[in-house]
Amino acid sequence: MARAVHPPRKAPPLWKNEGVRWLVFAVVALVLWELGARLYNSPFLLPAPSRILEEFLKTPALVLTHAWITTQEIVLGFLLGALVAHLAALLLIVLPEWLEDFTFRAVSTLNSIPFVALASLVVVWLGVNGIGSKVAIAALYAFFALVYFVHKGMVSTDATKEELLTSYSASFVQRVRYLKLPFALPIIFTSLKGAAMAAVNGAIVGELFGAFQGLGFMILDSRYVGNTARVFLAAVFCTLVGWILLGVLTALERRFVGWHLEMTRRG
Amino acid sequence: MTQSQPNPHPTPSAASLVSVKDVSMVFPTGTVALQNASLEVAAGEFISLIGPSGCGKTTLLRLLADLIRPTSGSIRIGGKTPEEARKSRAYGYVFQAPTLMEWRTVLQNVMLPLEVMGVPKAEHKPRAERMLALVGLEKFARHYPWQLSGGMQQRVSIARALAFDPQLLFMDEPFGALDEITRENLNLELLRLWRETGKTVIFVTHSIPEAVFLSTRIVVMTPRPGKIETVIPVDLPQPRSFETRETTRFFEIATQVREALRKGHGFEVQE
Image (cartoon, rainbow over all chains, first blue to last red; front, side, top):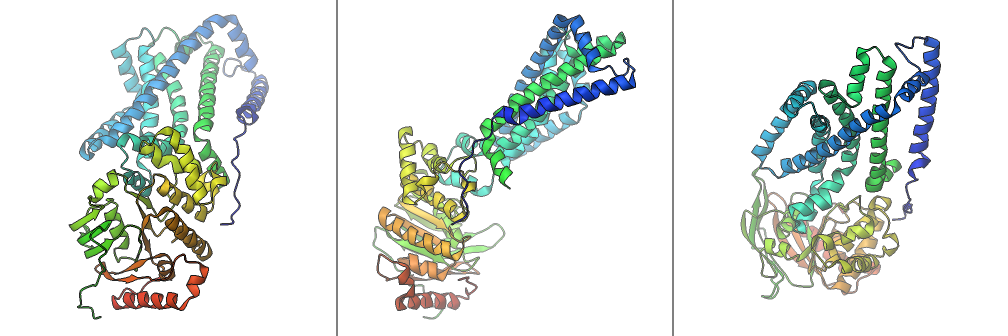
């Protein structure tokens, strides 16, 4: 019983490692890119960051409008996809076994259809105008990136913990609240990060298939006129949105599954 | 006593807290885990179920706790079926593994049954703190379970089982995974808890000294098929201490248990 006991430690603040590390990475990457592009000296194929910034400063308001529209699509799509994935995972758990099996097959079948085909259909169904169809496609991407992991996480609880709750005569909702969800949370957060990236992809793919605004539209439009720097500019904004989403999710992860980060750090 | 004689399982008064009558458990695989087990337990007793692997001791405990249902026979706990007893939160269950929630602090783990059972919120913390003090872990309330040693984790799980003040405590080899020294310390602590709280304990073990030291009666079980071989009363005086283990009477009772196990071909027991 005399094993060393660690006092509860607080996770270091976000900026102390993640934020600073990203900043250092960004600066180093930009400098390397700038140098590489200048050495390569072919602005059409590989524009330097300075050239891309120049492109942004030509029409900053327009680019920001495009970026804002895509950001909305990504965030709304991500939230919608995540919500539906959790509900679907819960539904799979409560369904009788034969229905669970059938539903699982349905989800897997949909998942095996190329997303691009699904995306083009969604645009047909929900229309080119507005952000609705793009939100739906981003949600679709996020959903499939999540649903298996949420489900797997919640059914992977160990049998003794389930029996403990049986001995308390816990209801299904209590089982989810006190065991299944907290148990699955570490894997859910990892998957949420993947789902956020998937939502970025989904929104852009949606815009490529049918949109008159947004970063995906900007990519398509700039490519037609051979403005490579502007294509890069759109990609950079996609990355920025992705980074912000990752940052938010990482902060939430620390807040809600800090115990897991701490526990695995010891091992 | 020869094998053909019926088991002289002592029967406490009519008001027994736990009553097991002719209970059998056959698993779908055809394994007879328990055959015609009968047992009466009075309130306040400390009963050990001892025997080698496959003798049905854990099966019997799980049947009492309504974690599984018997193939035949009847079980009553305070006059209720095991299901009713479970729903009225009549027992706390301590598993072989501490089974603590890694995402909850020690204090929050002890609070878990109170939250699930809808105990008024204001009572959660003071009650959990009192239970932690009872097992001597009040200083570790804010730790996470994985920051504690195995013995400490098991003490947390005992505190958790006591938190909602059940009448009965079911313990399934709770100290089986611990080293001998820790185990003897926790044995002593468990006896103190038993005296202070007045709970009725049913305790599964495969250690003869542990069973003799802790129990008021020892239920000796033997395998293939799992059955109750005999029940041995332990008349060692209370309160017991480390010295109790060195008395002649202690060894006599241990020998009795050992012989009963041998008689039932159950002698694969670890000591």
